[in-house]
Image 1 (tube, rainbow, N blue to C red):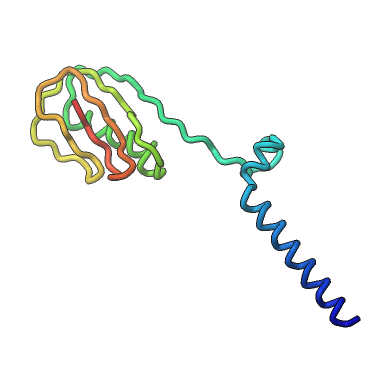
Image 2: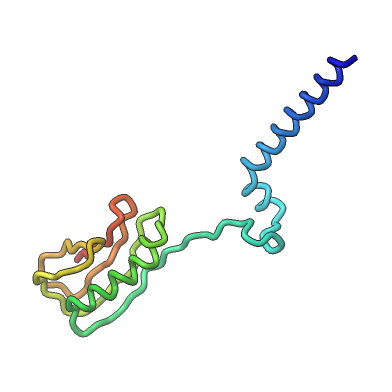
Length: 131
C-alpha cells in the first residue's frame, strides 16, 4: 500500500512536468490560436518589419552618410534585427571620397552616382552603403 501511494505521486509529478513542458514549448502557438494577445501583456512577440525609406538630399556628404547610417543601425543593428534589410535609398549627387564613418558602416561604392542604398547585413552586423 505504501509503495502504491509513492508510485502514484511520482506518476502524477511526471505527468504534470510533461504537461508544463508542452505548454512552455508551444506557448506562442497556443496564444496565437486563442488570440489572447490583447489580454496578456507581453505574451505575444512583436513582429519585426523593415521598410525601405526614400530620401532626397542635394549632395550626399560624409555627414549625410553618417546620419543615415546611424539611423539604419538604430532601427536594425542596435536591436539585433535577424534579417537583411534595405533601410534607406538616398537620392542626390554622390562622389566617393575618403570618409570616416562608424565601425558598423562600410562604403562599397567607388563611382559617382545619383543615389546610394543603405542595407543592413545581419550576418556581418554592418550597414553597407552601395551604389
